[in-house]
Length: 306
Image (cartoon, one colour):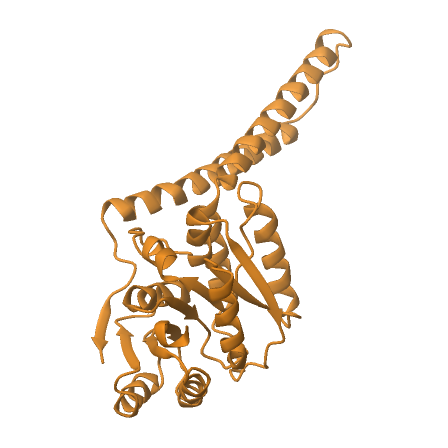
């Protein structure tokens, strides 16, 4: 069985010069009983990551592929680029910080083959994220599961079948969220929990801004919930405004009492204008993505390969 299965491991890199050699050595040792390839995608790192990749290529001429992107496109697009270049029967994606327990790969591969899975996520037994990341993650999962019960199950440590990857990589939009694309093509999603290692990187590649952007993109591609919320919010405000108008009209006609001053009017107008601008902003986000797709904005551009 092992002799007939080829394993592709896709690793998106960003400022990983200190750790990439150790990662490649660990992967080579763990996958020594398989035909395998390691695809390293440098997301335009600021350190010597690409130089390190080219150096490693001289030692792993047959097993290693190196790709350098022309600018920093983000982890999702870098991983997607690696998936397009993968030729294995099973494609595995991992992070570059040595936090994923890759020593369990042979067991995971055997499980994947024996159970004929499409997707196998390896999730941590315990999350060590900061509080704000846990809150954002929980909020995203709650919102996205309104329309898709399988949403929010993902992890960057995943095993994918080549047939599923072939479907995913036909996606032509510049907006890419891999875990959401997976749910478009299969419901055969399995998870297994394993203890993660402490990451070698002291600083996460996801800042507040990047986390917000990723959460926003995920919601945009996976659900129409933002538009539904805007519609419900508009209906609620309109209903409250109508009831408030009826209330003040009755007070004036029946009780001959009218409010003095314009404070309530100004507050109502400002609130209404703010709500309209917020709604237009949400709709504008969708229109912007549509325009980018119309103009065929590329999700990434490859600068160099080895």
